[in-house]
Length: 242
Ligand code: SF4
Image 1: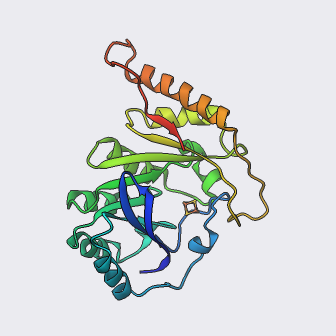
Image 2: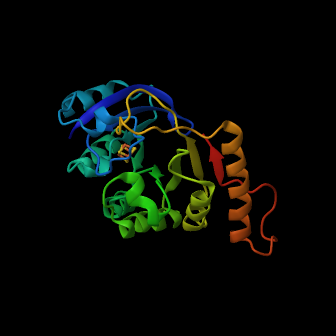
């Protein structure tokens, strides 16, 4: 296992729980706006597995959950055995993934080893390669989306929105592709330190623009789900801004 970073205690990474976050090095995407180049390019683990388990054992009384993030953690060959061990300690587990391995996702959920999944949806499927800067397997990503839409596990989709990369029209296409989703976060692009593509210039939409996008997308997704407008009481909120 290649651990590139750790947050020892977080109140924001697992919904409503105190968690530790482990960032696994390596990724099969090369999103230009990625603000974790040192994690994506990491080849040497900063911690031995024994240290990780020792740490988690000591913190068991103070932490509820472990978040497994990256990079892309499903690339780690020992991910399954790592999660089995952590689960045995009684932790809730959240997996952050870009959805490029639906099989491991299904296997982990089938064995009750995951409690929450956050999947990045980078772009409309047709535009994926442009955004992730590699040739991607769109069918596999579709399979991961469909699996989460089946509600086998608690989940959220999330999309980082850069002005230069995604327009409102793109978000509308994604909303079609995520039809039936319960939770979709639009993440405002934030320039934090060095980006994976040092040469590109990326910027964020304003807070008002992001909120307006979310409002319109919620209306569209509601109409798509309930064309007659009869089946839903109260506010329909799938799309949120973060
Ligand atoms: S933003 Fe893209 S390149 Fe960076 S870790 Fe996520 S999927 Fe990988």
